[in-house]
Length: 121
Image 1 (cartoon, rainbow, N blue to C red):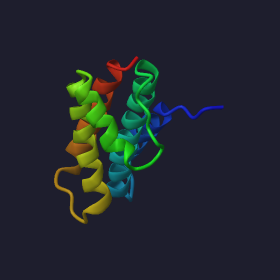
Image 2: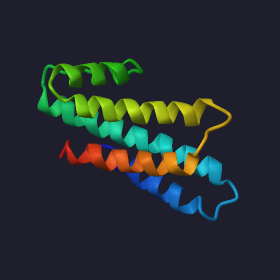
Image 3: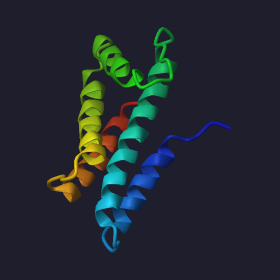
């Protein structure tokens, strides 16, 4: 059975919701942003692979940039831009000790995923 990448979005929403009353709210929000990015990345990756048979991801970290470049080259710059925005948010949450306006960033990440997923049904 294949993993449903949208489950990462459900997890992101759950983490965001529980952060309101959590003793580890910052960790919940950071994790929510990260899970939101990976939900979007994998859903767009699968959609791209189905729509464009010539798209050949390698199953490695290089696929993140490859996917965005491929989307730009195939008239889908809005998808590439949304993924780039989400990846930058994820990097801030995963690699920086201080993240400004984390609650807002979390809400923006969830909204961006919703926007992207409307285009890859």
